Length: 380
Ligand code: TYM
Image (cartoon, rainbow, N blue to C red):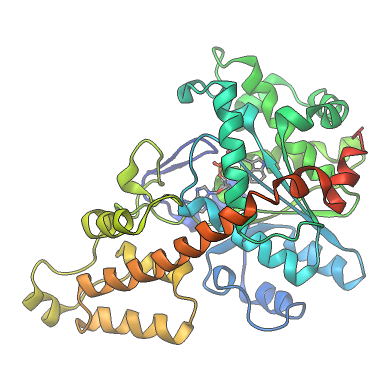
């Protein structure tokens, strides 16, 4: 394969069909979408109906169980290594939609330990904890239900997870994590143990656990599914998304070390405009005359892809933009202007909600109904 997807690296142009085969996951097909629709009033979320959440494990089981009255809970997370970009919000936006539609509890893990342990990051524990706090504000801003959502960071909640972490750890040997995560002999032992802590929350309730995330997190779930039986517990289910592509083109992923590849949630209006004008990879022709004559290619145009992924939810409008661009009626600059306006509106609203989130942190972490319940439990 001429691309690579691991929890720590994404390189090359991803062929998602190949990835489905390689990871041994299942495609989300029309039948499954139909099944989904039976539980949801109104339209399916854009991310689902446009195929960005594209693969799964055992989602059919979760939906079948639901028919028989067995509910599920949601689990997702973030590695607090720095400011969040727009791509990081994708799983949270979708998880929030699922919470609303299915009235499910949500658990959100911040792996301040993982990001400290990753050698290439060179972050102190103080820094990853600070980023956890900052990232939590962005996550709360997405709009989760404060009574049904527990947000926790590993270095704080560890005592409650440790007994279960030990039981999981005893079931996994070094060759297994080496095979799944590519750990080397020189990998520090903290990182070798860490996957256990990403698995613990899959067992927070006796119900089915459904994990919305991008497909890079899949290795953890493969391991979880290998050991669940031996602990007398359930295999978790996943719903996997594609990556919101970097601004610079459809290869690789947005990177904190290359600011031109991403739009951060903190980028102001002027920065967003400049980034999109300067870096957003275009499927347009080199001159206006040629563009009018030959048309543009929305399939490789990042501004169009971002609109389709998240920022233009109206199916009729996105179709018209696509047709106009393909035919040459819409110029690259005009397409970029549409994205800039949508994206800036989104970010202005996000930042307002983020300000309000400052007053809600304690509720999500300690005082909400679910949070209180969780601090009273030790997981065995
Ligand atoms: P992290 O911080 O690398 O990523 C956070 C979440 O964002 C997803 N993601 C993306 N989704 C769409 N487009 C993108 N360009 C994009 N980039 C990243 C990731 O798949 C992830 O869902 N180890 C984890 C933290 C974690 C976690 C979890 C994630 C702990 N428990 C449970 C998912 C589910 C991490 O470092 O994520």
